[in-house]
Length: 507
Image 1: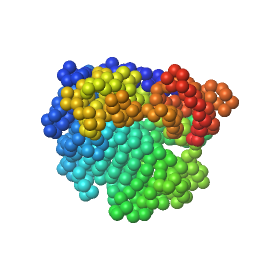
Image 2: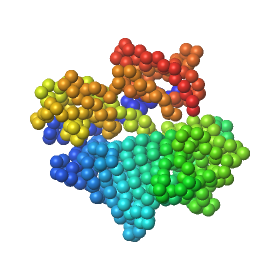
Image 3: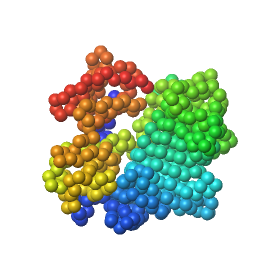
Image 4: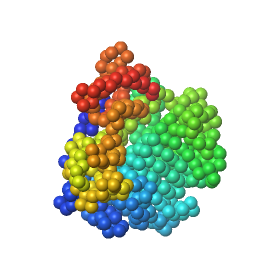
């Protein structure tokens, strides 16, 4: 079984070595963008233009506001972009392909960089329903990770270019026509995808990742070719009920001229999805498109017997190439797919394991005395964000901060920022310290990828018969290749407190 501790250590250590810490302020480590002049820059492009291109990770924090600009992130910059509030920090652009310009000029955010991390902001394109092709984000780089980002457009809004890899978690995406599309490798987890008007969600292009018949036979028992493209997992497909009637939209349509690949896994969807599931666009293309364990919004299984003939479903009678648990766990294993993409022409090459990148660092305990706050360094944190009465106050890489305008009646909160930019939960700062985001009682959750808990700890996993099958130290553990069934998890926190839970792997 593979445990991702090595990945976590590698990513966090490398990123911490390359944190840029300006000398001004109270050890600020972020470039702050603010329209009102209270930051280092008034525009995002100014801040991007100031970033180093020597492998160091730059951090940009964007204060609340609407920034009307087309943001380009060039190759050579390693960057994390963090917004103050997802719905109040808005980047917007209005020039579409109808102007005669291409994606480099029309995309609200156009990315050529590798390893971009983004969180807590909205990127939108306002060309409108009849404005033509208009991207709010284009990944023409590689290894891009978004968490809690809202992406709003109408046609062709979220674009994953050929030879790119992307990961999106806990995001919101809205659109009308083909608004998640193109030929890159992308996994979207736990997102809301909202249909604004009747149309199509995905339009996958020519896939560049292929699993051979021989490997497929070994992995899932089917001697079939599998192309991999856009994979959407554990997400909610919703609609604007005032504009989209029952059955008026589709999961997608193949755009690639030679092959198209998309898969919906364990998604809950409203009644706006047509009974056919997908529909045609590019004739003659080879499709690797389907769904697995689709549900309505209430969690009840959906009848997929009327899906279009070439769609993959769980029924071998519908299509001889079908989806079962072995296919999901092996063919659509995210780590395997990203690794294969790295060997198959992805721009940056190499490994890409985004799970550690979207794992928050728990908040430390903080002491407060007369407006001076102090705390122990949080393991894995590049720095901290301090808020006062819900508004951003400062950022610091230090373990102390003094508010010269201290107000004892004000509410102060702290969020950790991981080595790549992942925000920790907001935690209250009080006269006796932070009521940290970690609760006194250990919280343990499971997903298709692994087991997660809410504080750094040592963990051991045992089979039902008592045989230890895995161990790690951190905040999560991968299922690896373990079969589904019942396991016993032992988590040790603080060097002595021990929690033992029964854990089920259902997938």
